[in-house]
Length: 593
Ligand code: ATP
Ligand code: MG
Image 1: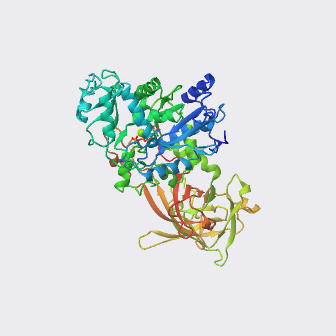
Image 2 (image 1 turned 135 degrees about the horizontal axis):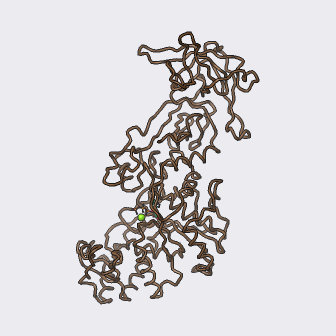
Image 3 (image 1 turned 90 degrees about the vertical axis):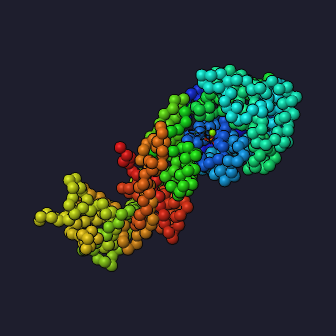
């Protein structure tokens, strides 16, 4: 087995957390269920093979990340199994009109970005259900010959009506007892393009009185005269999911086929198809088995591909990678790291019970990841001028601060303090409210407040300027020349406020985009709500901010903690050194109640 390139777990990710799937795999390994399997070239097959099977009809979202981390994560964690483990990347591209190469590319990017790959011993395990169209067709013919499938010529409406309901049994199609030879001729003619869409379908002959509606002679092939993104116009009949998926799994020697709970009812069909093909000698055991887990439901987010598409198409967001969207490209642009997403998936775990995960769990995973890794910096997001009246206008006082408070070895950032600075407008109040320890002016014979300019001097507020509307335009202060941070004398000054600042002379002007949740309702699309009604009109705010000069050479996707604000990322699309653009990833604390 080649060395695994997939990421080793971060310090937060733990291999020890078990779940029902790991228990199943452990017991399969203990019984040797998948031991001694060989591939078609006679090479031993991995003891555990999972797959991630997206349909390339949209961009992946945070729910898919759960499935990716689960499937690829199992392959990573079972690398120590007797024959190792792997996860295949599989595009479930059986639906010709809805699938596009753009989506295939974006899915590959997303999975790779999350830190996973599908290369084993130099072989790429990237597959397409459409690669199996020939085999699927051949197996369908075999099922017809064995009397296990028939051509139905009822209309779609009739088929639907005759399927019955939960309380009513289905009725047999008048075409159900066609002879295998007739079925075969019709099927071949369907394939040859002799019939229009909808004229016939191929159905499995199972049981129209089965209590599980899925088992009532499911349709497995239909006529679609449509172009396919990979097979072009070769086919005008296409296999359906229930037939394709289990066979793709068997062809790829998947051991554990993991999907979300809504497929629970389809499991008997999955088994039926594979057993039937085993009976006629197509497959031998052990056959792959399907296991279901609860999908991710995240508050304040929408994970329906259709609704995400609607948000994008109606331009309610700025494209698929809008930082407010739970798409993987959006989350990435927002500044999330692959490590934080893997950590999130590890923390939410895997179970069989549906539940909601609070958005704050996702945000906390990012904080926990970035706290230890992101360099610190000063950024003034809502600037107000501070003028130190007793400061020599020709002086640039050198100051420095650690790049990270717990990593002295990362070195220090250098900047200068000058007579005119930018501070946060919020750090000044003309009439301080109780408990406000930042800047306020002298009043009623009491001096103005004293605060420390972080890594600089202590200042005392002496007054402020206003414009014709009474808006504060500048704050005035004096500084204490013996109070510089890092000097022994500085200890003589005890202040409660500690403000960040940047020099007006050499600060970098930058666009900073502050994002809030896209929806005001934690469950925007539950019940019969229209999710568009819950869109937060203030979810994006664009500010002109001032950054400390050490941020002049930042590369796109570099992340920082802007002190007292939160974590920010240089936008991967719009940022450049000439025109810096930062996105807020997440605040320092969870401010949501
Ligand atoms: P569609 O309705 O188009 O099938 P889908 O969300 O199921 O949408 P797929 O491309 O079929 O999209 O999904 C690929 C894999 O990701 C599947 O195995 C699916 O079960 C899993 N998946 C999709 N949504 C979630 C989710 N919210 N949580 C966990 N896994 C998910
Ligand atoms: Mg699906």
